[in-house]
Length: 210
Image (tube, rainbow, N blue to C red; front, side):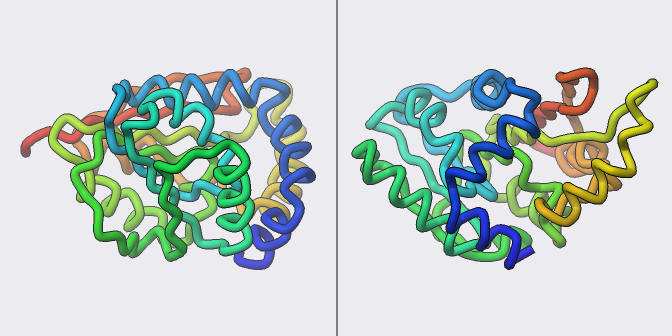
């Protein structure tokens, strides 16, 4: 996984191209929809797990404004370098970038209003621990929103063997993970919206007192 995302981090323009393919041309629509699901307000704090090159930052900055705070966390330093450059180009001064393992999620901040991960959890080896850590850094009533991909169903499932080979090799994607089910186990609740013929989902869990 480290080699894969180090490569994408060094060539963010190529990453943008594969983004178009992966989202079937609806990257901006789906990414912005996932951010809106968090229900962020101006001045809020939000954590993005596996933030990559910062492709969701425009939507997050718009949601929390300059008065809010965004923490971008990623395993790949090359990806974070690209995210740092993007932030600098746009004068986003309210973004902090941290490198590390999402399963450990070693950060000093907590009480986030929301946690976001888009196409990240499915690629994290310790994904279950990452979800647990996301729960622990949220404030009460805070939301975890995970947007990720699924294999084709119906007649298009004939493409699944090829899709698995390509995305496991070039994106460290593991479609066997039942992310919404694990979110429900940890949070006690989950709502799922399916998109792009069922090949994408947005799962939302709210932290409530147990």
